[in-house]
Image 1: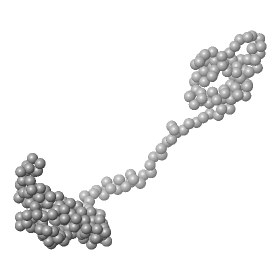
Image 2: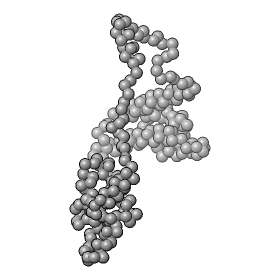
Image 3: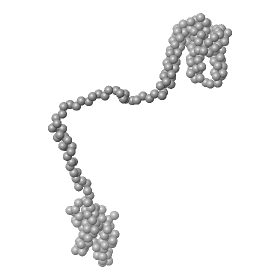
Length: 255
């Protein structure tokens, strides 16, 4: 619904709302005689007849009616400058006309954009240059054939083999250290673990300790340590049992 085409039947005016605005702005009709409440009632009746709420029409109508009320208030209370703005009634009328013209211009632009959108919605635009656009010619600088051949020979040469030997971890068998400790215990009654593995690598020391635990699990040896981080002593299980029977000596076992 277009607000300007709203038909009004008032005591002081009869016709479209657009004509009423024109007469008021040209000061051909005294706004004090215009029944603004009647305009609002007629607009509400028009909305009720359509049985559909038009938010754009309601917004436009509120702007126009508010401007009319402001102009009418200025005309009815010309001396109340403290409560009203600084504009005179003539200046307020010019400002209203300017706002209405600007509003119409924006409405027409919005309608034009809607038409363009409806007409172009089935077209899809490609991002980038058009398929038939001329391609720029790429020119290479003069090249030396000898240097080009040298580069090709370098590319054709097979790459060097990368050695991964430094990443390999080789673990000696646990059985090797098991037999080693057994052989040592046949010759000596007590063996110092730190002295036996002192010259080995950290990996070999770890495997030797696993062999030590394996012998202890089989109850073939006993392991003793006087204090934390003290030397680890290894002895045959039967000799340790015999020594315990002869003397009441005690052994602090390591955790």
